[in-house]
Length: 410
Image 1 (cartoon, helix red, strand yellow):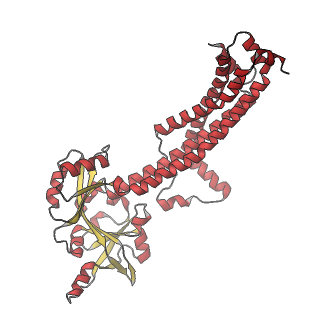
Image 2: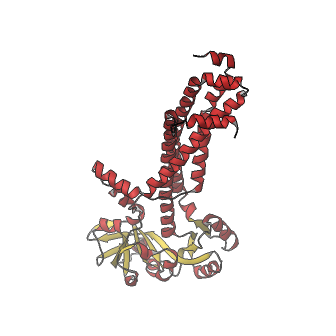
Image 3: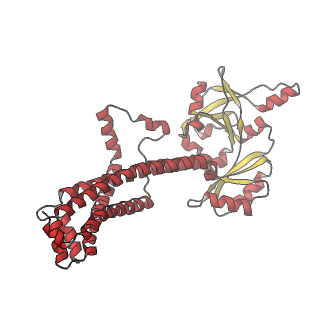
């Protein structure tokens, strides 16, 4: 072992003590910074992953759409289902209607689906909180919980539907009475926008309400796990679909929302990085104090043949060891905190006499966590580099000491 590495370890681990006091404080600073950064990134990843999963479950992986009504959708579905990457496809029609219950009007988004093929693509039954798919027919509808609450409607209630087709009939002096439907169930996806503004009917009913005859507005696809939706949508549009049809992945449909989530993670991580930077100052101060206290010792080392750059290596290596130990302990502490997050949150709510029911507003009942190896690698490298650089200034000071001046130091 080179003497300067031995000297560095001796400074960090003095005889009779596990750590010097200054080194211990520096390690704790790095540990807390790394711990908080890993926790924040993992929790933000958890929320992001949950949102992405919910988007694919409610919207499907890819939607085939057109600016016009699609009448040859059955032939398109047959061609698409021949692709190895596609495991399910379902037609849909959608639009806006006026919905009324006991003189309470709402203007929700209505989606007509094929009950037999929809479950292969979008697991509608998974989101049902009341009712079941067996009762779903042309005379029944599902309402989002938020929409049902606004209408004061529930399973068994009868709602009236007014469509744009009625306005066209009025222009021709015809009168179309509103269509009545029975509410057969409620659903909750976890998205306030969807749950508070969506009604689901069968595809046949939606075709009648909008006068589509045998046409649909689009086809939603389910891809095999691991298949990149964006890349495949480009290939599908170029190689399989006829001109006039667009393949839009869920990533493209929600790119603004996903961008905001990613930026939130970056901004919060950027703010918390300053904790590690503050810890680097404590490392620099601790090593600078060591240089001042060990001035005569450094002079003696140089007088005995130690080269200035070797003395500098000694103090830089101390910064590296502090960063390495602090980072390891910080990651371990973060993993422990995240593993026991439910108990920690429970204790916090008991002590502060507050409630954590806000999570339920997002259909999340515990803090989500998703680990990414890239986050651990980035945080580890950043902490090690900053800790090592923190020892650079004290190292340069020690390397510049002249043996005669250092030995005369009091």
